[in-house]
Length: 183
Image (cartoon, rainbow, N blue to C red; front, side):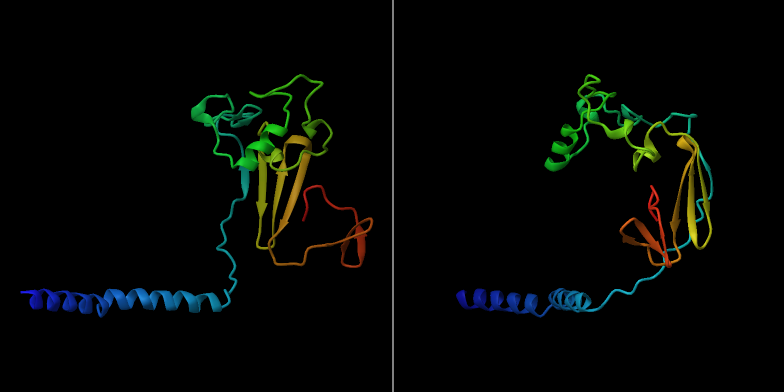
């Protein structure tokens, strides 16, 4: 009886060891190691034309506000609490807003919005949202903001970005003033 049990256990172990599932797992591990050694080849992303005039769904100022997005407002309710990392929460708490759920007195806020011209990102895209026009071709995407009549050009043709130099950026052989919204 004991010999039949040993034989069954040895047979089961042998069957599991030699099974196609075991070989497939080992082959997968070897394959993934080989994939790490290969260089990824860069390929252009598929072209999706986003040209047009984009506006908030329910008219000007709909969507993002000082109190947060309409779907997840910053109203202090637990169900609207964002999942911050510890560092993100510390950074959020270090910012003292002049308006919103966490607003402080006007003499105590440290929000740079009154000193920044033009507004930076993502605030230019999300704060008091208005119409935004996007123009796109195979070389660039141009974003025109109604608020503050600002624009941004995003080159998509693979050109080299301007080099930072004293006094600005080097574009070709010419030193130019850097753009607020980058290149």
